[in-house]
Amino acid sequence: MIQPVISGTGVFTPTQTITNAELVEAFNAYADKQNAKNADAIAAGEAEPIGHSSEEFIVSASGIHQRYVMDKSGVLNPDIMHPTLRERSDDEPGIMTEMGVDACKKALAQAGREASEVDLVICAASNHERAYPAIAIEIQQALGAGGFAFDMNVACSSATFGIQAAADMIRSGSVKRALVVNPEICSAHLEWRDRDCHFIFGDVATATLIERKEDAKGDHFEILSTRCLTQFSNNIRNNNGFLRRTRESGSDLPDRRDMQFMQNGRKVFKEVLPIVSKHILDHIDDIDVTPDDLKRLWLHQANKTMNDFIGKKVLGRTPEEGEQPNILQDYANTSSAGSIIAFSKFSDDLAPGDTGVICSFGAGYSVGSVVVRRA
Ligand code: COA
Image (cartoon, rainbow, N blue to C red; front, side, top):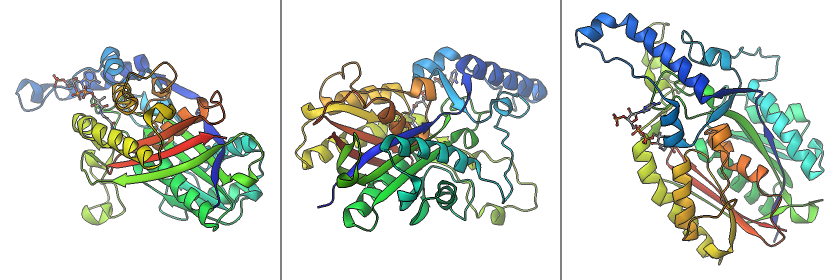
């Protein structure tokens, strides 16, 4: 049987950061302005004032200290409160393509491969810059890769579902070498004016090179098994689809809250934890890997308490330092890319034979796990 392996990963990190202090200052300035504007309605009891955000709350509720973004000036301007990214003409590379290509080049360099040797590019992300032509095909062309390319979206689980798709194609022999790319511009789907979630997301791009074991030139991780699961839930939702204009009258579309990321965070927290823990335990059990065999968990990066809980449930004890690395304190939630950043930055020290699980979870609900072993 053909054995697929991960032979390279790459992370593109934007140059701009927003600290919690900067974020809270901008949000509170926005809240004060809105409250002043609505002072009469608030005094008459017809409108609720917007409460201030706080750094202490953000750190204790999420574990996030800062986030990287593609544009901080718009986000931190109380009169704008969203990234201002220049729209690209049809003749220029898209923003997701630029981010994705950078991550892909790093993954290729780590694997000692040329882009021309790649025959599948999957752009797996929570949001895509346009409907078509596919971002993946633009990345394929920008890199000079061969074969074929397509976009897919499984929200926060896009990367692991993409890895399963690529690994299955390598196993079947339909492709030889695949790049799974996750350019996530989460700052553009986040409602920065909503105190309950304005601290959650950041931007990044990751790429994973998957090829046949017999072709791998250097260090690599064998993909022992992959497993995906979905279960419908409205608790994380974004209604911004292509039918939007057909549902609205006139050209000035109202500023509808449900056209950005929305979640019932408490419910997500409560409902997703048991699904993920059971998913990982069932998956490893089916392939005769025990929790004691797991040297590392590279989990989706949304919330520190959530990850602590999953780590404890899966290992049957509190994870030791380094067993379940978090990057969310620096990157925040970067949707599908989070577990791949953790894998990319915290896997070099594993010894041959060491086994670990990459696991993502999120909207859908969706859960994807990839069990890997250092060769
Ligand atoms: N600053 C200060 N206070 C805030 C605040 C902020 N930025 N945001 C909310 N609060 C307040 C709330 O109004 C609430 O006040 P109340 O008790 O008086 O009503 C209180 O803090 C608790 O808010 P809550 O939203 O219940 O917080 P939480 O402890 O559930 O944490 C999340 C919020 C989102 C961090 C947490 O629910 C979470 O991480 N959930 C899972 C998210 C996830 O994985 N999503 C997947 C996305 S892909």
